[in-house]
Image (cartoon, rainbow, N blue to C red; front, side, top):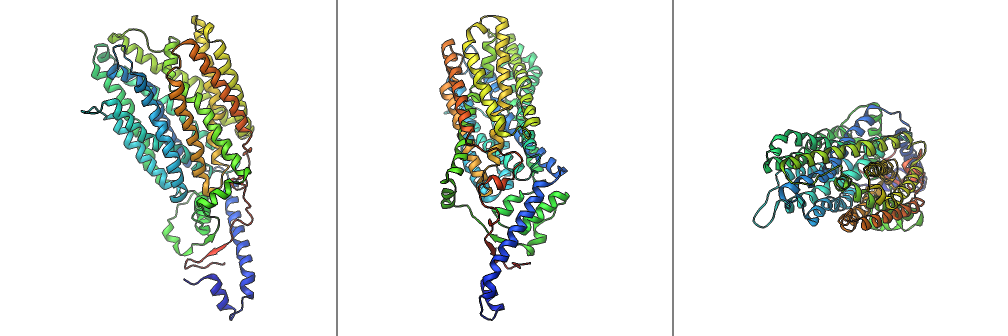
Length: 545
């Protein structure tokens, strides 16, 4: 292969005088092309292609949330099939089912996040959807064997499912952030994240429908009917994932991946033009027009160099710890919502007669719907309206502060509130208010910010590290706090006080994070953009135009 330097030497009869000037001209020209192309993407008007990307990403996130949070209802159903005489699983069976997906999510966010920075966002999006669909369907068919029981098989399926769900969390944010205009990036990402609330709502709604559908059989004492309810609730989660897998082919690879990781400036510029015009073109048609450039490449040495600078490292620490701090109370309370409802006399009722089983399952499903509709969904949409005006950092600081106050209030008022019927209603209202400020606060912002603050070549990897730290928090929440939660008054008060303190530490980690509203992803990367490209690479095509 003939290099540009050799071609320049030939054109000038062995003189390097022309080559000494040309690299600067090439580099300036290529950096301008990159800047102009990304500028068009950042300043674009909201269009159908942005809506389509957000809708598909939202469908994936809907599937993710349905699969992960349906377990709180499934555990209650399984208690009447595989549990003790009171209809309860053992504490370790319940914890294993709830913690399996977060453990898998930790693996998926780190491993598939890293692969997405190598192989592409779109390609890994397909991989995680295959994992999610396959494992969700597999859960519905789980059965016992000679050496394992149904619970063991389910835990394994949910661990593998968590790998796909963990990757979906990271990639959904990145695909939207790398394609969205600056003015509406926060709202588009929030709208996609709001699908988490709709997924949780759908899980409660489907649970209620299948319980009602099998109501007569459950009241007749049919264990097979209860067995069918949890299998249908789990298995139906594969349908939106299957739809998302089919339609994902209609969205392009993100132009920033093509521009900065594949380093193909011509194809990326064309993709941006196609996105803005709504056209779709095949790469093969333009293979002869590729312009590959020399730019920073991902490597362990480069990663170490980039994050050894405090300005970059503190952002990674801030995003990682903020997610860790959030997920401790989030998973402590969300995956134990059925226990909270039961303790406050809104969930499972005492008694194990067939009619009691039906009534308990129906109330747990209805309670899940109420908690989601009263807290989660309004919180998402409050974030939607304020995220681009208040800013991510302000919303996150406010959310952590309010949650710290709410948990402290719930701790000190726990005994008087749960000693009367009215007090129990107030306690549930405080719980719903906490759910509201999860989402009008750090649950939303810790989804958005890591998708904005890292360089493109490490965006998915660093996002995966941040999100994986959150999953560590979720695991800690279930193993250390999940079992004693609500077991007795003193333990519950101590846990709520601990959660309040954790929220205060989240305020400190938020201070390490920059405000990202109305800023380009390139400006937020802490890298010089005017000299990002250092030259052109020969690939059998013209290098200078």
